[in-house]
Length: 276
Image 1 (cartoon, helix red, strand yellow):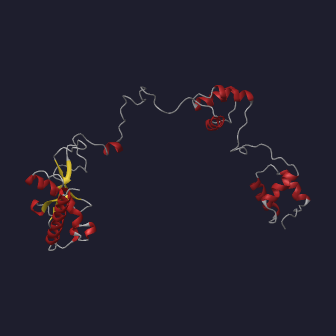
Image 2 (cartoon, helix red, strand yellow):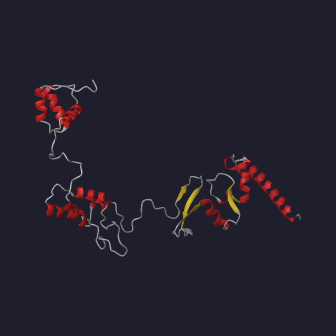
C-alpha cells in the first residue's frame, strides 16, 4: 500500500547494510535473488538507504557523467594555460598535478563552462597560406576512376545541334552562337525561332512568332509574326484557346483575332486624333 513503510527481517537488514555500496539497480536485483521480495522496489531500497544514512561512497565509474572537482591551484593553472592546444593542455596538466582521471574532453567542457577563449577561430587569416598549398593529392585508385582525363568530354555535354523538348512543348536547340547573357560559347534557343530568323532575319520589335499548326513543326512556313497585343485575343480572357484548338479551326480564330485587333488599333488612333 502506498505510503506504508515496508518491514524487513534482521537477516534482510544485515544483508542490505553489508551490500549498501552497490549501484541501486544491482542492489535491488541481488536483494530479490537472495530473499525473493517482489513487494520491494528500487525506490523502497533507495528510501531505506537514505533514511538510515548509509553512504554509498566513491567507487570507480560511479562519478561518470558528473563534473570533476579541481583545487584552486589547478583552476589557476588551467586558466593561465587555457589557450594551449587541447591535447597538449591535458598532458601538461596531468604531468603537473598527477590528475590522470582528467581527459581532453573534460577539459574542453570545463573551458566552455568557464568561458575561457583560446583566441582561435578556425578560420584562415587573410594572406595566410593554407597548410595544403603546394602539396599534391596522394594517388588513390578509387578516386582516379572518377577523375576527368585531359580531352575527355563529360557524358552530359550538349554541343551545337543538340535538340530537346522543353516543358512548354517547344523544341530547343543548342547553337554555336555565343550566349549574350552568360558569355558561354553556345546558346540554347527555340528551334522554330532560330530557323525562322535564318530565313527571314530577326523578329521585328513588338512581334512574336505564333505557330499556324502544330508547335512541334519548326519549319518557318508554320510560323507567323504577330503583334504582342494580339496574343490575349487568341488565348486568355477571350476563351478561344487557340493553342489547343483543332487545326481546322485555328485559321478562323486567327482571322477573327486579327480583325478585332485591327479595329481596336484604328479606334485608338481615331481617339488620339480627336481634340479634347
